[in-house]
Length: 128
Image 1 (cartoon, helix red, strand yellow):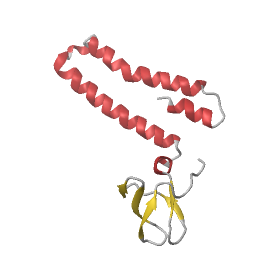
Image 2 (cartoon, helix red, strand yellow; image 1 turned 90 degrees about the vertical axis):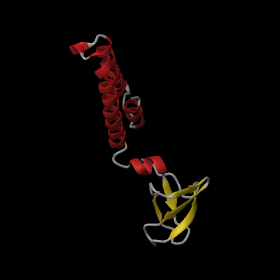
Image 3 (cartoon, helix red, strand yellow; image 1 turned 180 degrees about the vertical axis):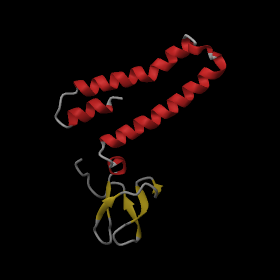
């Protein structure tokens, strides 16, 4: 929920609007718990936990989509970073699915289409 404020700060703008968005999201997350506490609509203790879990799942998916949107659709590159092929030297975004063995990954280069071992420290960070 604080991603909106940090996003505005990272872009050199005031964080106030992002902070207000974060507070509104926090309220939206907690408000159904209040409604369950006062048993709105008389649903009882059998239906409210189910509705709250469904709401929490949908809220989590929506926040994940919002953070992905904030990263300008480059969620994979932001989270995983970039790698450099040891054979052809091309730099590419790390694939989501790869065999991880601690400090090394076995992944495929999209440029030369060969599989190779790549250190997680190889490649460089790119600015957003």
